[in-house]
Length: 335
Image (cartoon, rainbow, N blue to C red):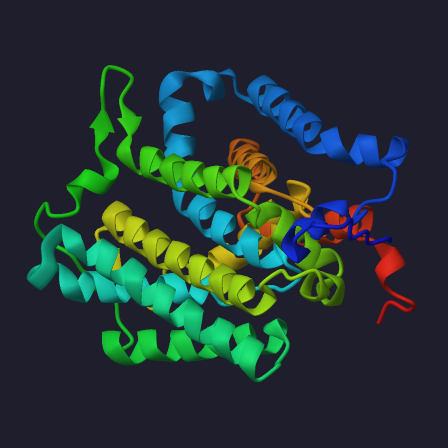
């Protein structure tokens, strides 16, 4: 890795000259396009097993069910891109689902934005603890997982809270002649905002620099601490929004409503091609990863596989994807 500072160049611009990636070889090129190939293979396999899968209603139903996962994964991807991890997203979404259910009688449809704001504050707190106290993100968010789960249990009385009325109908309406789920449009809007921010600003380059070599990024003038806190805040914001979408879909909030999504979220991010060690990835790759996980879930259901085996498949996928994408040059030893 080399850093060049030509005369007159600002420190933050110098980061663009850091050679963050090794020259892509055949393996890198194969890994780059592998997620798209896997998605195409899965769609063909499921379609052969059940031709009804490609019907519009089936595709819209699958899209409907994928929206909370997509929102969660896009936010958590940002944290992984800078070399950290957020294990609390599912528990935070569950807690926010309880808040939405409790706040709907007073706030109506505004309960979902309010819960998203609460999630952002929770994520910001985790980011501050991680950056200021210099505690590994794994430990901070593992503790956060327990804290948010506990708060969800306390405020809900350890029970499911039902929602009545039509205040949340806007989140899962069918729009237009194609009957597109409004939740899917919300999720794609979130994806679009993240993609635009990473494409039109230096954010993606900075996050990749932090993920690849944080000390070098700091020396180059990248605001490392602010960006890491921002990543955790964005992840919390997405968790709060996902919790609201789950309530709109099930008309209830529960302290464990989204808990089962933690492993699919991590699987979607790494299977899509974002490196678990940080420094490489993006919104498009996360979108492909979410589609792979969604088609896989549908395919297992179509094939009549016991849902309990889904966890085995996800766990195996995470290990396989990490073994293929991990950059071992970063470690002298793997522990």
